[in-house]
Image 1 (cartoon, rainbow, N blue to C red):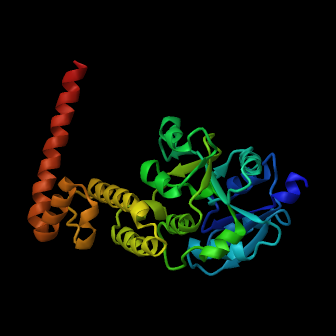
Image 2 (cartoon, helix red, strand yellow):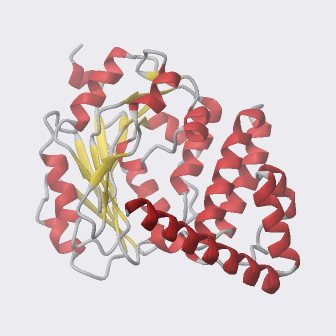
Image 3 (spheres, one colour):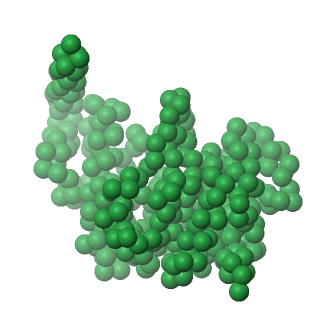
Amino acid sequence: MSQKQTFTVSVVIPAYNAEATIERAIESVLRQTRPPEEIIVVDDGSTDRTAEKVRRYEPKVRYLFESNNGPSNARNLGILSVQKGEWVAFLDADDEWLPEKLECQVNHLSRNPDLLWTFSNYWLCFYGVGERRTAFEDKKTSFLLKNREYFDDYLDVYAQIGHALTSSVIIRRRVLLEVGLFETDRFWAEDTDLFFRISYRHPQIGYLSKPLVLYYAGYPGSLTEEQKRQIQPRCSLVLKHLALSAQHGRLEKFMPCARKMLENCIRRLLQNNPISDLHEIPAELDVFLPARLRKEVWCRRKWPRAAAIVFSLYFSFKNALNQIVQKRMLL
C-alpha cells in the first residue's frame, strides 16, 4: 500500500481577523513537499478581509465560516468537517510551516506505526526583535527519547521539557473524536487541555528534533499575550486535570505538570505586575508551589496591599543591585 493511501492528512486552520497572516499560513501548506489531501480554513467570525483572502485559494482550500465562538469551536468544526484525512494536522493562522513539515512527519509515522500522535521542534520567532531560536534543545530531549523517535509519556515531556506547539502536532482523527475534541468554553490553553486528555489514554507521543514550524510569538493584543496576565484560567485548568488524571489513574504523573504550570504562571504574572495580590489562587493549590513561592503567595493573599508594596520594593532593590553588579563586571 502506498504512503499516500496509508496516511491521508487534512489540515485545519482556524482564523480570526487574520488578514495580515492568513496568506502566509496557507502558502506554507501549499508549498509542502508532501501535500495534504485537504486544507480547511475555519473563519471564526472575522470582520476584516480574512474571508476575501482565503477565498482566492478555492478550490485548493475549503472555506468555512461560523460566528465568533473562539478557537476551540473553530478547530472542532474543522475536525468534524474533514472529508479526506485519517490524520489531522493543525496550523494557526499566524504561524507557518517549513516546506518539509508534512513529509517528515508522515515518514516518521510510517517508521513508528503504533504512534497515534506526534509533534516536532519549532522555531520561536519573537515579534519586533528579528531573531529566532529553537524551542527545545537536543540535550533536554535526548534523555527522555532514549535514542528513539518517541517519548514514553507526554506528561513527562510537559513537566520536564515543555508543551507541544499545536501547529507542530499531527493526530489520528479518531483519537480526537475519542477524547471529545477541544473544550469549547475554554479560551486559553485549549490545546494544553486536549493534549492532557489524549495523554491519559495514549501517553506515547512521537517527536522530531528538526524544527518544522515557525511560531511567531509576542504579537501585541494577541490572545496569548492577554492571557499571560490572568491566573484564574490556569488554576481552573490545574484543578480540572487533578480530578481527570485521578480518574484515569494518572494523578502521580500529572502532579509535576501542575507544579510547573502554577509556578510558571505565577512568576510570569508577578513579572508583568509586581503588585499582584494573587487572591485568585485557591489555597488547595499551595501544596504544588516551592516553599519560598508558597510563603510569598500566602503573604500576598493575607495582606495584599502591604505584601505587594514590600515585594515590589524588594524586587526593585534586587534589580537595581544586579544592574550595579553587571556594570562593575564590564569595567
